[in-house]
Length: 293
Image 1 (cartoon, rainbow, N blue to C red):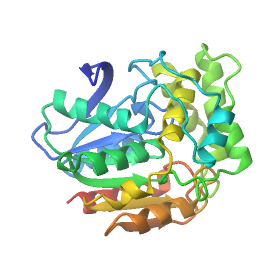
Image 2 (image 1 turned 135 degrees about the vertical axis):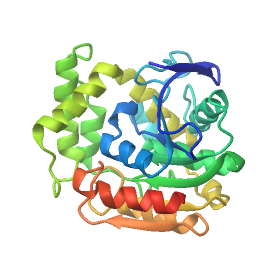
Image 3 (image 1 turned 60 degrees about the vertical axis):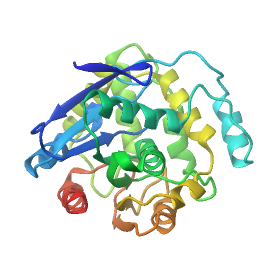
Image 4 (image 1 turned 90 degrees about the vertical axis):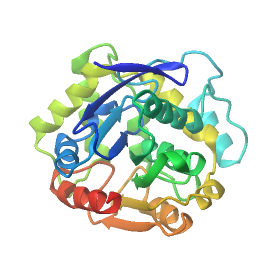
């Protein structure tokens, strides 16, 4: 798999489409490597005339693990975040945004459309706020501003993502765990075909699942705090996509992002939870391509 040295670490990535076409960078969420993006979405963007760039964020997939730095226990970090206190962490969302610009530099891409899902949406927001010359447009999917009072997950959803596989080093155990998680946070209105869901989760497990990396990514989110002021500074064209049934990041969080970012549009998808269900991919694909054009 291709990789580059960028922002002081190694980042694994994949590209698809014409290298001379407008670039779209896809940034995935908590602990999920690039293979978690649905193939239908990637293929659809390529057919629409874009060059698609995906990366494994730091601490997942085939990219570098960041083992140094302070590690605050997640419950303590969550409490400190709600109280507006500093959360010691090995890195922040700004560092993860720097990874994306480092990848763009390595691939000699001056400006790209940036699409982020969940934690990836937060990374994309920070990138758009801090490096607007590198971002042609922003799409923030099922994400939030970091305001804890509109981002509270349902207890069962939070418990699912904080739990660990019984055997983190075994592909089968990790696959079972991810299938369970998606059963909790995924769209019950659009249940996936079980074999397809298992195949997608197995791809994640085989590429590199790291429960310790997930904890560090979560700390990066909590350490970055409430970013509403930063979102107010975004000036690139912005589309916010959120499901009405999201148990992990409620629809109120998506509505807040759309309200705060100047000129942002909001697409709420009825029945979508914290996933990208296959029946809604055509609508999501149409919205992203129209926005980026």
